[in-house]
Amino acid sequence: MIEKVESIKKQNRLLEALTSKKGKYIVGTCLLSGLGIALPRIFHILAGTSAGAVFLPMHIAVLIAALTFGGISSSIVAGSSIVFSYLLTGMPSLARLPYMLIELVIYAVLLSVLKKKFNPYVSLIATIILGRVLYAGILFVAINWLGLPTYGISVIESIITGLPGILVQLICVPFIAKTIKKGIHLDD
Image (cartoon, rainbow, N blue to C red; front, side, top):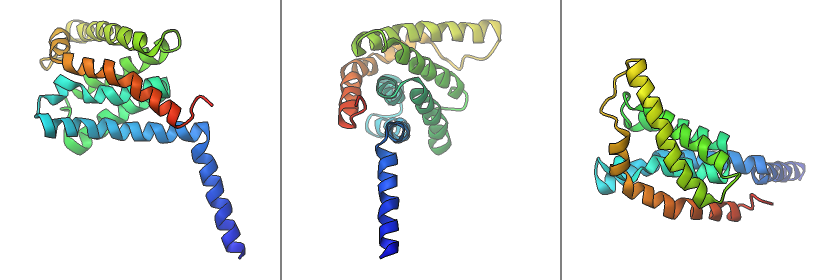
């Protein structure tokens, strides 16, 4: 009988930990990191090898994390998604990995800051524009001042190619983030 009571107490403590605000952040960050790894694979399977550049699936999890949980969570999602995706699938290539990591962390931080001042849609649009401007500046410095190889990375080309992904982000990300926040009662 005492063992059963102790077991129930442990279950209650676990439930309390998981339903606390901190627990929700940790679980949400882990789940979105997993989504950041899974989405590119799903897009590649369904739409071919160029699907990543077209639909920007890694961006989706990072942007949802930024709107839902904030800068630390979304930066963790960015880093873990990129690194574990590379380790598990070999994508992105090792040459592109640091550039994509920088790009996703820029979006994570920008959206986390902008969402505090503007509504999710305005914040997301500003993040998409400012993020690409900052990323272009970082690429310029990396290539022209530091002499790092480009590996064929072009911000203009990535914007044009990624227009369908940007559209998906604008339509889906704020709605998904709002639904998650409401569903897990994050604002309580």
